[in-house]
Image 1 (cartoon, rainbow, N blue to C red):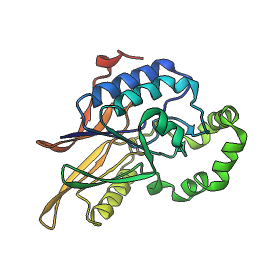
Image 2 (spheres, helix red, strand yellow):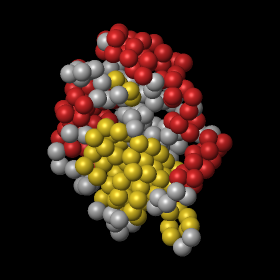
Image 3 (tube, helix red, strand yellow):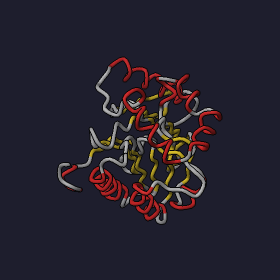
Image 4 (cartoon, one colour):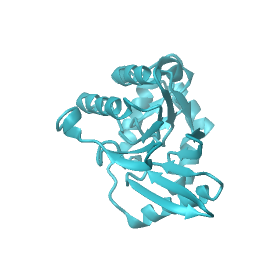
Length: 241
């Protein structure tokens, strides 16, 4: 049994080479996995608009569809994804959720993007019905332009190491583990991290996937090894970009 967990590629329309690189990396990382969980901010911005897919993400949708045809794939919406929508699910076969709790190899695992840890108020506002309704009203092209214009104020896709933030995420993981989960997997901070502890006679694990581009990091679970942090070699999938 193998599961992989990845996040934070922050794909846009501005860099098609980056898109190709990321999707090659995703194909390579997931090729022998049974379960794939994308923990959000895979896109710099995405909102589901009826029967519409952003044309510059056609390659992404196709690749995710090919992967989901062979294995279980979940997409947890990050703070850059808003209502992915039934059409995205229909096109890809990917199950879109806000949070996820599933059984992996007999272990209860909780997944969340993690934006509720650092900025719960901002998350609540941006994910509110009025904001989502406004996006629907403005339509995909205008909403995309507004989202890209807001990037300097709302997006921190290139985050630096911060021990205070690292520990805040660890405390969140420990609280969730205290609810009876065997493992908790988050993202958002762009700081790859793993803690394995003994709690009341059982082994529990906290994982932060880091980010798919800056650190080339992702999380994994293999029956024989348990939960681990992994990295891929960018040179193996596309060279430098």
